[in-house]
Every structure is written in structure tokens, then in C-alpha cells.
Amino acid sequence: MSTIALVDVNNFYVSAERMFNPKLEGRCVVVLSNNDGCVVARSGEVKALGIGMGGPWFKLKDLARKHDIIALSSNYALYADMSNRVMAVLSEFSVRQEIYSIDECFLDMSGHSGNFTQYGQQIRQRIQQWVGLPVCVGFAPTKTLAKFANHVAKKRAEYGGVCDLTAMSSAQLDDIMSSIAVGEVWGVGRKLNEQLQQGGITTVRQLRDFDIQRIRNRFGVVMERTVRELRGVACLEMVDIAPARQQIISSRSFGKSVTSLSELQEAVSVYMSTAAAKLRGQGSRSEERRV
Image (cartoon, rainbow, N blue to C red; front, side, top):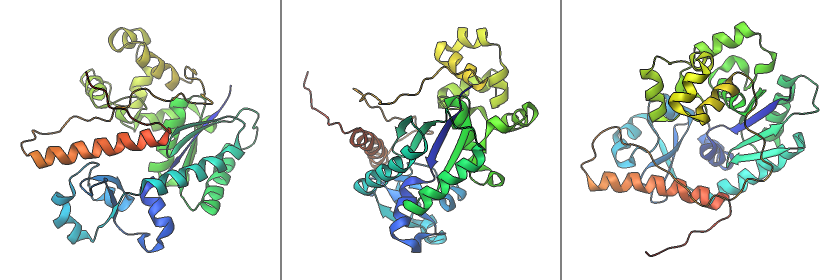
């Protein structure tokens, strides 16, 4: 059985800014959208304050003064350059690499027979030394499990930034999956999370162990693949060269009614900034079409 690694830069935009300004280390830092309107990235210290993604900056001014939060304008040229450096270093650790996003990369570990935890620490040390960015690494038999392992590596300090699911016993894996909400599974969005919760599936383990036919009947073949991947059955292949997307969507549902035009404008600005970053990341351009 092959093993896949998922390497993800921690708080990427903020970490890139800290690389060139060490005084930001340990401080509460947010990166704002193109017009400095909304929060598009948060440091760990800011996340601990409960500040969510996409929040309008003008609404956070009082909280910012109270906690001495530093707000930075986004610098997408810098982030793209730092991403390229990270991916170049990671290419030396595997013969097959899938760049999934600006700060995430899958590595095929076929042919590597050593200790994955030690190898993951080598990856972390190399990226830190050569690029100056902190990363976490997750190892598992499938891409979905590798994403899950990376989540565990990020959220649980005892793993030291590297989580190898292949080295765990069934009981250990059950315990971890039982303690993590189903919404953390790769591909489970807000609406699907609500549907799963209503059906009594609240943890990763419950989703993994749910009847596969019932999952397919209710949620379709994509969700069936997710469940199979959680069981260690690889359904998603590595993609050496990701095809350029013909359509990019960046959208969210509002948690409350929006009655202010300025609030709506700020939210739209965040989503447009995210979509534009994805567009630049794949080297594409947009065209205006009139119908």
C-alpha cells in the first residue's frame, strides 16, 4: 500500500509576512483583502481570539486596539514567490508531487521505506531553514486521510507538526477520529456538514463507519469516495499537472441577514480577492463576456 504526504504551510500569508518582518513573531496579525476591507488571513494568536475569516476590518477596530492586532495589506506577489520556493524544495522529497493550492502539496511516498515521522521532520526543517516558513506534514494511505493527518499535526502539539497515520494502531486511529468533528473532513462543506449532523453523523469516525450504500444513496458517489478514502481505500489519484480551471468559485453563505450595503461590499471584496489569488496561482486570466 502506497503512502501519501500532505504538506501545508501554517497560516501562510501571515507566515510569509513574518519571514520578512521578524518583529511580527508572537504578535496578533491579520492580512487584509486588496482594499484593506476584510480579514483574509489570521495568525494563530488571532484565531485564538475567535476572530473569523472574512470579517470586515472596520468592525474589528475596537478589538484590534484591545489586543494590539496588527493589520497588513495583502501582498499576493510575495505570497506567490514564497509558494514557488516551498514547492521547489518539496519536489526534492518525492518523485511525484501534486501542488494542490498556493500553500498545500501532496507528495507520493512510494519507494520510501524509512520512518515517516522522521522524514516529515526533515521536510519541516528543510522548509524552515531554506524558505523560513513553518509547515505541518500528514502521512496516510489516501489523500483524504493525508489531509486529516495534516489537520491532526496542526491542531495537536504533541505530534510536533508531523502525524503519521500509517504508524498508528486501529485503536489509536479510532480514538483520534472519534474526537474530531466531521466538518473537518476534506470535502465536507458547511451545508453537507449540517446534513450529516442532522443524520447523527457528528465525528470523523462515525462517517468512516457509516453504511456505504446509505451514504451513496443519500449523498452521491463523491461522498462514497470520501468514506472509502477514510477507510484507507485510495479513490483519488495523484495529479502530476493539474489542469487549469475554466471556472473559479469563491462563495460562502452569510451566518446572519445582511442589511448594510457596505457590509455586503466588503464580503464580496473578500471572495473576489480569493478568486483572483486562485486565478493568479494557476497563471490564468479572466475575460469579460457580454451576453
